[in-house]
Figure (cartoon, rainbow, N blue to C red):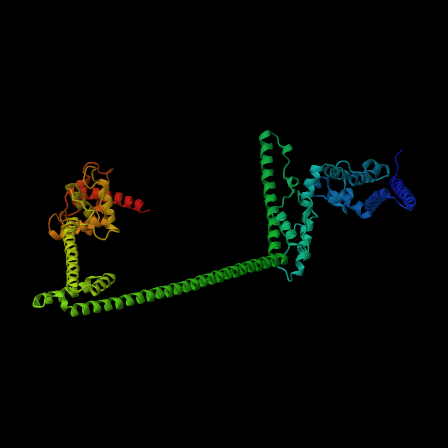
Length: 586
């Protein structure tokens, strides 16, 4: 036996009220003191009560909407042909819940629609049902078919006609409006995210980490919205496989286009929010101030280190200066002491000389009484002894002369004179013997380590001087390296020539006029060098394999083919030598 809609609604009310009374009676029992485990039971029971109360309120709302005359008029105005343009949630009576409606809500609402609007029900109540053009009940069935299928429902929710795809303004009157306007947009569009939970905009109290996480999430926002519901044609209606493939291809292209526009809309709003967010500007300013503070601290530390280094340097200078002053003072003291000793020695030597002269004068210069010539000679010998004898020798001589008599002192005087004369003769002979050997070891214009120049070395020197003309950087070092590399090992000077030896040999050769190294080969001028280089570039070896050098020689007036080829080889050797010199220098 089928129940009437009114009877069904009353049964629903009764069953709901009975369940609430049962829950109330359970709560009355729980007024007794609870154990720790009883608190968890109470929390669970309260949660179940709230859930059932919410379900009861939803049932009442569905029943009220279904029973309203406005809702009946809306259903009768539906066109089954345009089912795709209808609001499926409103058709089944869930306009107030929409995407928040659960599967149970959809089933209950559909059952209520069927109980009241099924064609058989309406016909039995005496209402006329148009079965030829299609009844509006087919729209209810179609709405339930879409909402009960999760994939089709998601496709419809993606293009929900009541969802506002607006874009917030890019300029605001005041920063306070930012959280109100953009917070509403982010909360509204958070339902499309594939990742849950979705961070919301927050407020001025949000931390920098929360703000950074929010914008990082929305810059990488992944939406599950898809636009298959808006396909203009159904591929299943194609007559053949090719037509179905073509329809599917067109549908995919249209979906991708709409998806791209949606992501561009989200990205544009996120960028505007990031630009207008007062917290971002605040954090940027704080970051700038932090960087500035670090920079100033770094500069301060550098300045402190610099001042410390300057102080250490000044202290080192002060210590070095004090050490220098102390060293100079010690040297001055030593010099003064040495001077004092020297003065004392000079004074003592002067005194001894005076005593020696007095003794000689007293003893008539140890000459014979009737021989004036011997006395004059002894006077000269006396002065010679004063100049040659040291202080101790002179003092010893004075002491012995004072003790001896006249004849003995004369003999002692002559003995000393003879000894000094022999000493002078030995020194002269030694000096005369050493002088010739020194002259032989150091001939004029040659150093002690020089050797004779061979013919091959002279030819290499001439070639190198022309290869590396005056003005070449480190000319003589390069020339020496060139000669040492190209000379044979059987040459006497195969151990190598120095730059100084080469310079001396070149200058001596040019000065003497024999084998002038600078003038033996005709020097290339800058103009000739330029013409040669241009000709070498113009007539390449690949393009002119047979007559290249003839054409090069014709391009350089006054130069033969042989001279051009020789100059080319010299330039190649020059480049090689410069590279070798540079590698040795490094």
